Length: 241
Image (cartoon, rainbow, N blue to C red; front, side, top):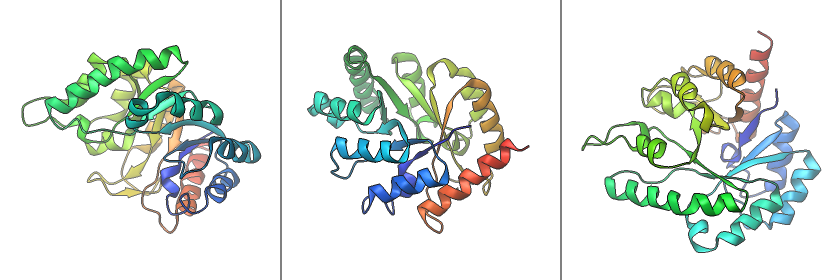
């Protein structure tokens, strides 16, 4: 199996030395990288490093602003680094006004991206799966009122008290990537295999459903690269069972 990593996992290194971060994850054995910022590096430089280390950009976590302000520039950047998957890493959705704005943004933006050969994805946290005080469930609006592709963060589903396996199955036709993460049920993360989230079951379901698995670890213990290695070795241990 080939696995990816969200580069936020190595945020103690990426702002200082992106090349070393990319080399580090390639040396561990990751095949795909999902960027969380480019730190002013030109797209051509990022692509050169990806090619040098045999990595593939599976997508990026990039906000809504670049698509509002200069969509052609950010899409050209993505084309150069070799991906057509643009992932919104999260947005407000804390009240009906914010939800309405984002739904309208999706309805306007997704057709434009589709014409350019791109897919627009949304990455959830736990808040989208928690009912607001007025009875609204934010994620239901993303499911029912937009054509977003959905990058499921299985750990935040678990923290929200939602069964990640059931959601993966229900939304399988709209999912290309999932985040594989671990931690406790109060939102404190851990390397894969060291928390209480149902990681092994998630991995098995992802393999069955054909999803690309992107590791995300958030605690930098002891460093981002070392935590990324622990998580990779855990995934490889599951293959042996």
